[in-house]
Length: 474
Figure (cartoon, rainbow, N blue to C red):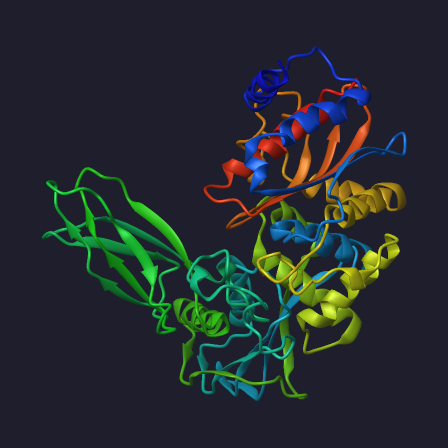
C-alpha cells in the first residue's frame, strides 16, 4: 500500500491541494520525508533545515551540514552582513569635481567623476549632476573628462564566474562607476525595405550596431540579440528574421568596460545640455586640488530591496565592496568584504573556516555553504537584531506576490506568506527565509537542491511543497 500512497501524496502537495485541514508540528517530518522519497532524489541532492522561532526548536533537518553551492542564497549572508556592519543609512556616493578655472563660461581645466560603487546609479542621476555643472555657467570644457575608479580593485568579474555567461545582464562587468546596471536595452522591430529597426536605450555612441536582421512575412520570427562578447567589444549584433506583424523584440545585454560607458554617457549628457567638451575621456585618480561640484548618494536601505527581491547581482557585489571600503579602505576587494561576512558567521555561532565563500552574489561555482549556516543567519537576525530583521524580511520576495517568487506558491497557504530568497544556477536551486504557520508561529527555513538536470522548476516545486507544508502547521 505504501508504494502507492507516496506518489499520491506527492501529486497533491505539488498541485497546491492540501490533504489535511491543517498539519500539526509532529506531522511535518513525515510529510517532508514523503516528498523526499521521490525518485528525483535518487540522483539529485537536497538539504533542508527548519526551525520554529517562537518555540525555539527544530522542526526538520535533512543533510543540513552538506556543503552545497548557494547560488543567490549567498545574498542572505551579504545583505545580513551589510545590515549589521554598515546599517541601512550607509551611503553609496558618486562625486563630481572640476580642476582649473572657470572664465567667461569656459572651464579651463577638467571634469572628474569619482565612483563609490553605487549599483543603482542611472542616467537620471547623471542628468542631475550635469544640471549642477550647468549652474556654474559652464558652456565649454577645454580639458578632459576623467573617471576615478580607485575605490575598487581591478577585478571586473568575480572568482569562479563562468566565461560563457557573458553577455547576460546577470553577470555585469563591475566597476566603481556603474550606470544603468552596466547594461543597454535593445529593441528590434520591423523596419523598411526588408531590414529590421534597432533602437538602444540609452542611445549612445558607445555602441556600434551590426544590424543583420531581416523582415519577411513568410518566415518565422527568430531574432537573436547579443553583444560581441567573444572579442570583448561593445558591438551590438542583431541577426535573424522578424515578421511585420510581430511586436518589438526586446533584450538587455551587459556592457564591457562599464566605467568607459559611464564616461561616454556623461560626455553625451553634457553635450545634450549645450556644454561643449573639447577633450576626451580617461581614467585618472582625483587630484588633491579639485573643486567639489555635487554628489549623488544612495542609502543601503534602498539598495537592499531590489537586491533581494530581484536577486540583483551587481547590487550584491557592490554591497560586498562597500563592506570592504568601510572596514579596509580602498581599493575594495571581494576578499576584504568576505572578511566581514566571516565576522557575521562568527556572530551566528558558526565557524567560517568550515565554508568557502568567494563572492557576494552567489554567481560563483566555487562557493560552498550549508543550510545549517543559512538557517543560523536568518535565526540570528530574528533573535538578535529585531529592527534589522524587519528590513531583511521586507526585502525578501513574497510568494505569489513579487520579485523572484511572484509566480510561485499561488493559491496555497504559502501565498503572500513566505518571505524568502531564491537562488538559481544551472543544476542548482535554493530557497531560504521565513514562513508564518496557521498557529501564527514564525518559522525559519533553508532548502538547497543540487545536481539535477533540466529547468529550475524540477527543483523549485519541492521547495514550494515544503513551504506549503510549513504554512499549514497548526
